[in-house]
Image (cartoon, rainbow, N blue to C red; front, side, top):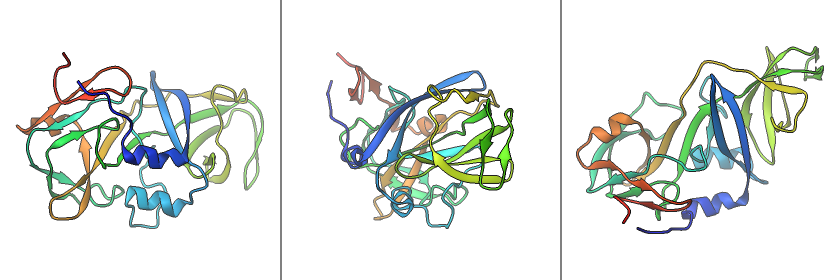
Amino acid sequence: MSHVSPPENSRKINAVLVLGVAFAVGGLTLSLALAVFLGVDSQSLKRYFNIQSDEESCHDNGLLMPTWPGEYPYPAVNLSENTELQGVIDICKMTQSESCMVPAGLYHPWAESDSQYASIVPAAIYRTLEPVRGKLKRHEAGSELTILAYKTAGICRVGIEDDIWEMTCPNPILAKWLQPLESEEINPRQFFMANCMDGVKRWIEVDEPLFEHGAVSKGTIGSHGTVGSGEFQ
């Protein structure tokens, strides 16, 4: 068993404010640690995600986050040997996968590695309980407001129909003018950045097919901040 501090990239994201936010999506309550970069512009976020297009938000019905969701992110990915996997250079271009020889090791936000982590989580959708002023017009109570992207210093891009503007990210617990709406359940998608042995970094998706590779297994999550490659003693 090993007790490890957050990896170096988490300390980089320590230039961030971590907000504990919970919202319901399709009956599933997700407890998210939303990392909002403080004083870091959107270009820095794009460099973190390795986004090479002009899009700041590149997944419909989902938000790109520089972390894995949950107080206890799951699962840990253990590679017992160097393994050839499929990955993408640009997380916005999921269809352009390439081969990546991933070095053996333990991949998890709590593991001792220089990997970066990302997830695509369901977009938060709310019903407004009071009138709200958008960029184009005033919207009456009962409108559906969607969080389209988390930007910098606690600022969000939001939208009601085709009216899109930026505002302070609403806290769904304290914001009495918002009511979370249930929507189609969308499971978060999780990724880790692999330093492929050809010298190129690629995002590897953590899904069930990943563990069908013989050298890939699930590590063990222990107490908070504790992760290991096998059973804890």
